[in-house]
Image 1 (spheres, rainbow, N blue to C red):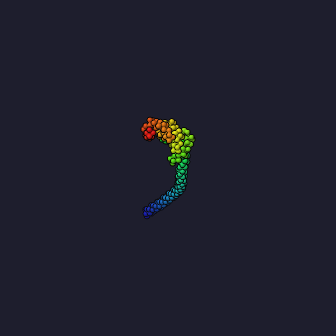
Image 2 (image 1 turned 180 degrees about the horizontal axis):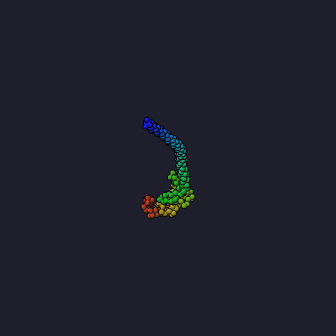
Image 3 (image 1 turned 90 degrees about the vertical axis):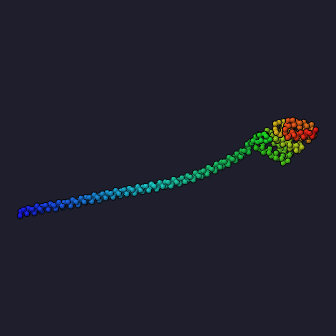
Length: 257
């Protein structure tokens, strides 16, 4: 009986101990679970906080980036506007410069044209090249035009005035020649001979000398100076044998004999 009680007591103690041990294990497990849950929740809260912080920073950075991009775009738009304005100004400036250059060219051309009217010009007359003033050239050509129209009186007056106003002119030998012809045409033979001889003596190498000698002979024939005409024709043939004037002189000389 005591043995049975002893065994029952021992068994009860064992069961009590086992029950106590089982109860302890459940509490530990629950505590561990709670701890784990708390850690997970804390980790989740921490992760959520970090995620929120990251999201906030990303949002702020994105906002700042958008603001920077907007500012940059505004600057680019302003730069484009400035560039367009500068291009427009440059184009206008180029047009202004082109217009100024054109006007300057016109002014220079106009000035050159005006000055050219007063500048000496190179002239070749009867094989002789010389420099003449524009007015001098104009007056000579005007008198020659009068002669060619057959207005010999006015041509003679014009050539006399021309020679008096331009004593050193390169036109002098030619002007003397046409003056003599104008005077011959008006039957002023004495004056004609004087001017032809002035050409012959002053410009002995001039191409008009043979014609002038023939003209002197013609004037002498008109005034019945046959002896003087013969002498003039003989000098012409002797000194200028190959000229047309010499051939004409031979015909006149033959008629005199």
